[in-house]
Image (cartoon, rainbow, N blue to C red; front, side, top):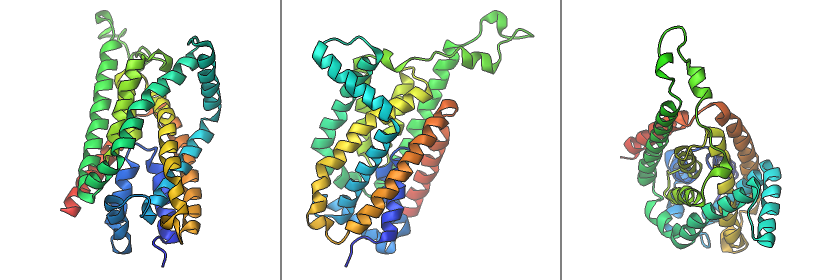
Amino acid sequence: MSDLSYLQAVTIGALQGVTELFPVSSLGHSVLVPAWIGGSWQHLVTENASKDSGSSPYLAFIVALHVATALALLTYFRKDWVAIIKALFTTLRTRTVTTSTERLAWLLVVGTIPVGLTGLALEHTFRTLFAKPEVAAAFLTVNGVILYVGERLRRGAVARAAAPEPALSAGPGAATKGDIQARAPKRRLDTLSYREAGVIGLFQTLALFAGISRSGITMVGGLLRGLDHEDAAKFSFLLATPVIFAAGVLKLPTLAGSAGDHIHGQVAVGFLTAGVCAYAAVRFLSRWFTTRTLTPFAIYSLVAGIGSMIWFA
């Protein structure tokens, strides 16, 4: 008997594709949604918290979905990645960093190191200890707090930096909200220091907790370093791509073992669903963050997290 139905494959595939990029935690939702539904879905939560990908069909399936999500990101940012990879090899040959693209390439390398090392060492431990519905609900609530506080801190910094001169504080010559926004400091990606990239990458390790969003936490890190929402989102997506891809590829051979038996069709359907949904998600979010903020996702995380804690209690 198959351990994973086609309905589950499509549902979890769509969920992974969207929530891996939306700042609401894919790992948290892969735990919470089956627990919300219950019944035949409940064993997915049990496997997620008690087994490794070599023996769990569900975790082997999740591995395939990570690869699909990474491929969607690579497709959307293909021009950026071609330029970044060329720049990286150029710096290795010349041993100098001279262009903004070359600097961005090394910022991504530095930012990837913390989560890469932590993930390899602690991924199974974190998932076994924390990938449970009650804990995931609590961390999803924490995710909402992080997004909300990050937005408030960024907004306060922008308001202080772009405050109008006293002479313009009132009357006909007062600066408008649009004037203040126009004068807000906008820091380019390539002006980040390597230390700052490392700190933002370190933030990404918090996504090992089910309920904490990888894209959300890295976006907050970027915002707090002076990036605007558009650049913070782009850096977050670029930084996540090698991590998601590596996490999937390193464990992909498990699908050839016993964990992949009888679910190859479900894996194919879920893979396609996750890839399409991830591409649609990154396209939507890249436009969203040109003019909008993390606040709606913070509110969703708080409502869903607190509601889930009450439900599972």
